[in-house]
Image (cartoon, rainbow, N blue to C red; front, side, top):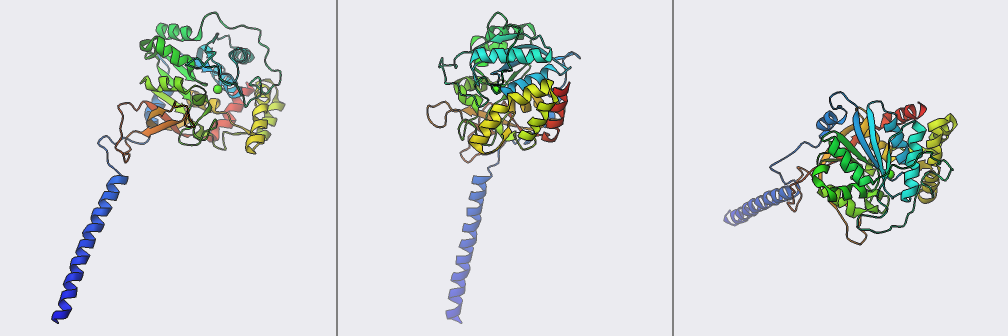
Length: 374
Ligand SMILES: [Ca+2]
């Protein structure tokens, strides 16, 4: 019996040690992976976002400035705003991006003219924030609108510069103006440099920018608008103003415009035909480069978030860290979620970059068709 007692004691001791070791190990693993944070926040801020989204100021129309680089999806988005009876477009500011500045200005003018809008168009950035002339390569065709000879405006750009127009307009309407950025944000970054206090009086900023939590289009990690001028996007996001951003990860099948859908639109004439033709260059690009005859329309999905009740359903508050090193990470935006405990324990003072994480994409086609049919 004595000889049998010793192994049992040893075995019990070993099991006890093992249990403690497993418990400690589990606790350490749990702590490392699911680090609790003092300021746990709800994942969604949809209620707050929605409450601010569509309320007008004193029952008046919402006042928008639309900053654009005028590709086909910008044109579609511009038409959505111009045809919305609750919206007053105070002005359209233009920067190079998809196409040259001059081409982008003419497209913005033509698009507004098609809708009967006489909103002024202001030319802005012809170079990036740091003064670079970037190669222009448009997936939409040379003119950004499918090379269909659609662009022949009768109006001209307004006198004055886009940056001055933005600052003067916000000063005259403090707390009332919303800015919707549909291209590289060079104009906005320069306005922040010139008068940051005035730029803080903007009611709300909207941006089609970043990959969201998905893949890029300019590079695997960068979305075109940020990639075109990452230094400008860095100024924009580091300004501390609240920004609501629509990223590429929201481009699901419901919002992609198939060749068949575009063919239907083209047969309808009017604005539908104009937009369908403007996307023809992108459909060809996507077919050749990515094997799918579709057009993605992120600027219009962003505008749908701005305009349509219930379209934007959830957002995630983040800290945006824009990468500007001259290497393959250029234009990547690292998104740190508020209230999520990262292993490194990293936190920030500023989580004012709200990323759209859920949209009601099922209504996109019907509502866009209705706008273009008017
Ligand atoms: Ca654009």
